[in-house]
Length: 447
Image (cartoon, rainbow, N blue to C red; front, side):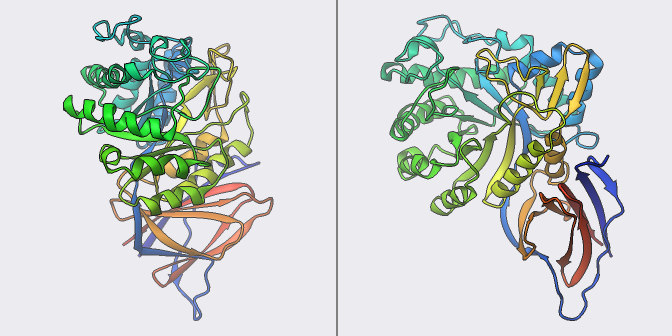
């Protein structure tokens, strides 16, 4: 017997992760017509999980809300049943643009890192991480990324506006990562991976640092990899690139083609700001099948977009596209922002799935929150993507088998019209309806 839980989020309705009557599978009629056929025997990558970024902006914003509202947001993200089931996070190694200002963990010109101190993070960031981990329970997968080395280590003498790492500070900067990992461990926050540099091809008005592909390769090969190894941190992974899909092939090839660098690299981090070229993600997998791909950042730029639907659809479209191209997990950008789309120390305001209005103590859950939930609530860490054959034009789809054997099928309709289609699994078919501008998850348990 096949039991299905059907969950719907649809525009211009009250449906937000709403449980509906499950679709019914029956023996397929002769001819076996289908729009989407599920192929559980065909398997692809294993899923790490889903999550978002513990920026100082997110943590500070939640600290300005009532304790009840702060707790509600944490629960609605991280609780495995009542929330989205987030099991991953990203944290910035000292400041990023979504911080209250530039800061580091050491005093200027301390090449010994004797003054290394993460007490800045004790105010907002670490309390949020610890509360989220407690609500989630069990293992937590944390990525740590630097936006810039300290100003004194850089060619331009400031953390903002690009510049590069001065070669004479490469060894000290590599050691800085290990000090961070060690300090977070002492706080009970294990770091699963570090990325070499957030967006290394971009000169930004905020915290940024430029590396060529060859510079990133040499830093990993000669400094970061060996220093982490010598510190006994072989269990902490290294992620390269951490930037857009558009030039990812050109950027990762010099690194992953060099065995001395590649031996230290877990895989590639990607962002969505340079277009939706999912074929490039798949190409990187085909070129380097023993390496992994993780989505490490995406958000809606240009300030708060309360109540907009296209933001959720952007998440859904990108998540399906990347997951179908061998991506193993999805990290959203800021978990929460305030009513301005900040704080951001250079005014680079953005949207987030959750907007916390610090003037009224109101919390707004945007369409993106619900669209992400159609994946994170039903595709459990350890799930495996399975094959599917689709002739359903205009319907995006992805399918996964969870560790408990249940199958999660995500279907998305960006069109203005309702769509009906036939789903086929193991010789049985079910009719399902997708409202206009909707995302639907069917969780299928075969008895």
